[in-house]
Image 1 (cartoon, rainbow, N blue to C red):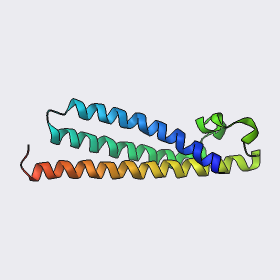
Image 2 (cartoon, one colour):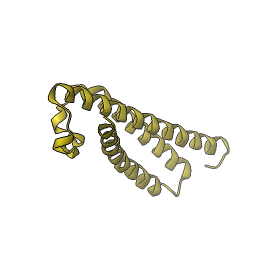
Image 3 (spheres, rainbow, N blue to C red):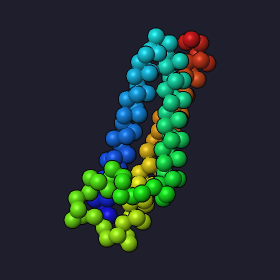
Length: 123
C-alpha cells in the first residue's frame, strides 16, 4: 500500500506542478502590476484547487486500470483484482485532496497578499 501511495502522490504532484508552472508564468506576465499578479495567481490557484477536488470526488467512477499510477506500477507489485479498485481509488482520492488543500492554501496566501497591497495603497 505504501508503494501505491507514493505513486499516487507522485502522479498528482507532477500534474499539480505543471499547473503551478502555468500559474507562475501568468504571474510573471503580470509582474508589472504586482496586485494584479497576486490576484490572478490566487484565482487560478483556487480554480486548480476546485479541479483537484472534482477529480477526487469523481475518481471512484474512473477506470483505475487507465490511471497513470496503475500504469507506472510494475506488474508484480499490482494488488489482486478484487482489492485493486478500492486501493487505487482510495490513495488517489487522498492524494487529490491533499494537493487541493495545498492549492487552496496557496490561493489564500496570494489573495491575502493582493489585499495587503490594495489596503496599503501600493496600487
